[in-house]
Figure (cartoon, rainbow, N blue to C red):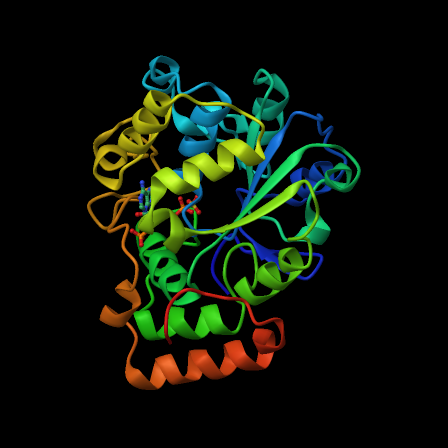
Length: 289
Ligand code: PPS
C-alpha cells in the first residue's frame, strides 16, 4: 500500500480524488450539451480533451493557446488542496458546451449520464501501452504515493488491479457495455494515431458539429504529439506534481512501446489475465499480443 491510497466502494484512489468528492460526483448536474471524455488513466485523455475542446469550439485556436487544457476541460473527480482546485467547481463554472474528463468506472460516474442527452466519448488504448505509460507516470508524479518501485512491481500492481482509479479490467468492462447507446461513441487511441483527420471528422459528426476542412486541418496540426509536447497549454510542464525530468506527461506517444518494457513471460501472463477477465467480450484491440 502506497501513502495516500484509499479505497472507495472497492476502487483504489489517491488523495486527489477524496471520498467527499467521489460522493458529490454521483449527483453532479449534467447538462444536455455536455461532452464527457471517459478514459482509464494514460489512454490518451489529454489528447482527446484538446481534440474535443477544439471541435466543440469551432476549431478556435486562440483560446486554446491562452488557457491550460485542464482549465478548459476540467477533470471531474480531481481535487488539489494546495492550489485549491476542485474539478467539480471548475466544471460548474466553465461555459457550455462543456468537455469534461473522468477516469471513473461506470458505477461511480454521475448518475445523470444515463438520462441526459449529453454525449459520452469513451477512449480505449492497448492495455500494455497503458500499463507502460502509467508506470512512467507513477515514477514522475508525486500524487501517486511517491512510488519508487520497479517496472516488475508496477506490472504486478497493474494486472492485479492495484493502481489509481482501480483495475483497468474493471474500468474497461464497465464501459464496454454502454458502447451501443446512441449518446456514446467508443474510439481507440491506435485509430487516432493511424488517421487523426478521420477521427476528428467522425467525432465532429457524432457531436453534431460542422467543421470546415481548414478547421479540421488546424485541429489535426495543433494536436500532433510534437505540437502538444511543446505547447505549454497542453504539456503539463507547469504541473508541480509532475517531475518532467523523470518523465513528462507527453512521453513518447507511440503504439507498441510495451515491447520495450515487457519480458516475454510478462506479455504471456498479461495475455492470460486479459483472456480470463475480458476474453468473453472480444474487444477488438488493434494490435497483436
Ligand atoms: S492522464 O493523466 O491520465 O490524463 O494521461 P493521458 O493523457 O490519458 O495519457 C498520457 C499518454 O497519452 C499520450 N499523448 C499523446 N499521444 C499521441 N498524440 C498526442 N497528441 C498525445 N498527447 C498525449 C502521452 O504521450 C502519454 O502516453 P505515453 O505512451 O506515456 O507517451
